Image 1 (cartoon, rainbow, N blue to C red):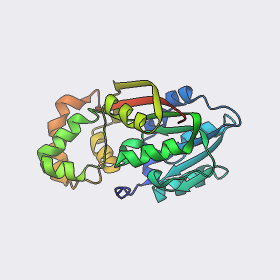
Image 2 (image 1 turned 90 degrees about the vertical axis):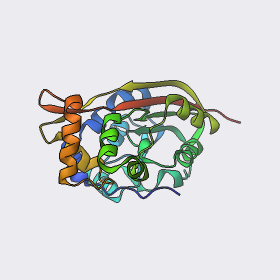
Image 3 (image 1 turned 180 degrees about the horizontal axis):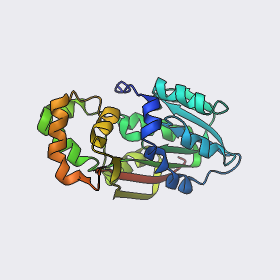
Length: 248
């Protein structure tokens, strides 16, 4: 059974976390959507990258399981198609030429039904272009959370799936998606100001019951590693994959 979708503050997300879709610009260069293509944007959030795809002339559908995100996407881009649906449950009425996903798949547990649904949505020869958190992502933050809450509690509450390159490539290939390119790479991500770590936790770490004292402990523990030049640098590691749907 898929886990319940976190509740999102879409306004706060748009105001303070633009890096999520700004970093996705490089992924769009790999996607290279063409006029007339059908593209599925999985985990579309508030729709910024969905709009970029649409501007290429492609017919794009954005899906997300967050009511808050989909509602904001529809306000932002009323001419585009956004659907409130869990990715694992999505069934395409007609196949897509490409499936695109930026910074979303690591929120979708368990991963196998999501991969199966993405593969099923693609035509033979269609392509998957995706980037997500990979093995080692926010390792320092997770270690600090374990110090505050205990390892078992953190493992129980964690909403994230951060696979290795080999693990995720094997999963894709089991579902008819031949990996043509894959990379796992660090991307330290800046959160400005003294309160940057708290801002990050308030947006992405809401599953963890960390009180004021716990937040102070996190900051104290992580400051030597992650705070420099007046900002917190969250230790992101990204997994980027390009794959092609192969027919039977």
